[in-house]
Image (cartoon, rainbow, N blue to C red; front, side, top):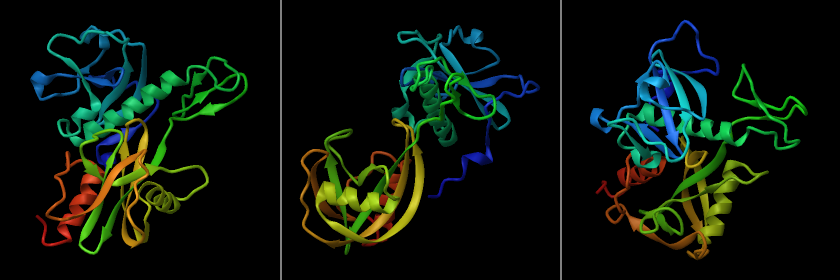
Length: 280
């Protein structure tokens, strides 16, 4: 992964610095849609107070600072109209529109605001929870149960057979596109075991030579994508017919262009192209 760490610009925190009370970045969500200003290069609103934007939030969470500027995430009621000149836009459609660090921070923001919304009450005893002052946690004052923001690790793999890569059509998402085999890690298994299981379940083959490639936060809905490369070992392609509708081998020249250059899927596919048949 070539991207520089967001932590060169971003400092996470759960409690605002009272001395740093200037204009803040506001990541404001109406369901899964983020408030932006398309007339100003799709920038995130910056304001000292949401009253400046005529926004009445349902809840607010502090995120830390980006380039020294405070950052907050907020949720508004469904149907809320955006301020003049602004729009609410699906976050998933913005990953090649926003500055990369802003997009990554927006992904963190939506996961935190959804976690806040989903853990207002204790899942064990039903009591109203409290937000910790020291860490990103919801605490039940009655039974002591703690809940942290949910994170679901998933594996994605570039499977290579000689000078070809395996791509598949999925039954979800962009059904008309071929992409890599991916899936969530199940309880009790390692990342490597998840790779082997997903590949065997979805396309019926076995792989070898597994190598770690990189990772990427992916907030749709709350994933951490862990990328691998692998070599074909044995077996014939047999799709499961549920998650995978079709799968086949592609040369570097045959690979469909990735829909985005931002995702780890695109980086894995570009890695294959760069290392096979001299690219396109």
